[in-house]
Length: 119
Image (cartoon, rainbow, N blue to C red):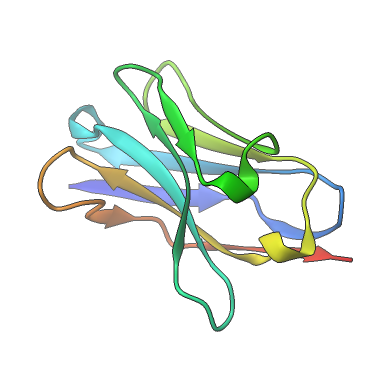
């Protein structure tokens, strides 16, 4: 089992920055990658970014490329999402999730954290 605890988030103005953190506990050595997702009111949850522990490779959804950066620490127990140049359309509940690389994608999820960007 892997437990994920998130921190960060809050209310900011357009153009501001925020950093979200995702702390992993338990069988962290079994985690293949950690992803960030978000869900805005009335919309489906969408993929934002992912970080692969072994290679350090990352990927992003197009709408955040150049503004958001995902990274992991050397202990492989924390993943960050640095969000710059925030826009009102980035407003959502953000979730981190851990994928073990098996057929069940992202079986472990954090509790979610609200990010609100005012115009």
